[in-house]
Amino acid sequence: MRNAPSPEKGLDPHALQWFELSLVLPATQAEPLSEHLLEAGAVCVQADDAQADTDAEQAIFAEPGLEDEHPRIWAQTRITALFESSPHQVQDQALAILAQACQASEITLASPWQLKALEDQDWVRLTQAQFQAIEIGKRLLISPSWEPNHAVHANRKRLVLDPGLAFGTGSHPTTALCLHWLDANLRGRESVIDYGCGSGILAIAAGLLGASSIEAIDIDPQALIATRDNATRNQVDLKTHLTGHKGLAPADIVLANILAAPLKLLAPSLEALVKPGGYLVLAGLLTRQVEDVASYYTKIRLSAWRELEGWSVLVGQG
Image (cartoon, rainbow, N blue to C red; front, side):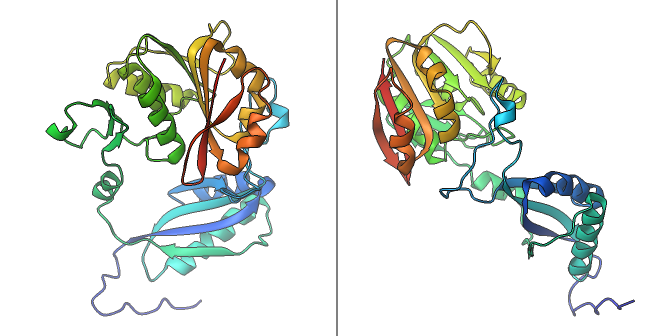
């Protein structure tokens, strides 16, 4: 047995530190290994598309009735496991955790892996510092609950939103673009459908700007819980539905901030939800994907409204 290295002078040998173990795996290995990494001692495990922001980016949405056509996880998945260890034992512990998880998953690991130490931080303060108030257009302010409502923002509608399990805090270009469109175009009394609502940020913004009725739809029940909680906090009335809900009436404004693949798949359904003369707003698109996605919409002519950091919004009127 190899002896552990002697502690460096001035370091507490009993102190623990956070470490991150990451590797890229095919879909068939990613799910079982993630589960067994947790069982082997990882504090948490995150899965992401290893090809994100490239031409090979893959959507994994499963619309009702089409589950078999869409994978549950990306073909190439980046697994990131977080664990806590003594700095002097991290290499051995990471190898032990990985070996145990591979054995339990019956996987022979062929891909390389990386190990990175995370600096000690005041994680609460660091997280809060990353989510500060964001002014949108002339009328909106997206603000976390801990941010004071300064007098300089007095003429804006404040949307209080803290980061959580559902995507959408207003900082990503796709969400910001949709918020800017709402700020510039929603005049009040419109009916709105937010398809793929996530945290509910677009639906709530529409309510604060004067929408008369709001329907928020998502495939993820957790997103609907987040949307209802955030709407209550902001005193906005809305209705939430799981994808596939029947009986939705066409709306004056239909927003869909998702990804290119589901936007193409959903083209007939989204067009049918727009009232004559109403607006369809599509986001979650890289600028290079605009023409391809627009070609799937035959009843509403779509054009790029605005571009931000390589992302674009398509808008059309029924």
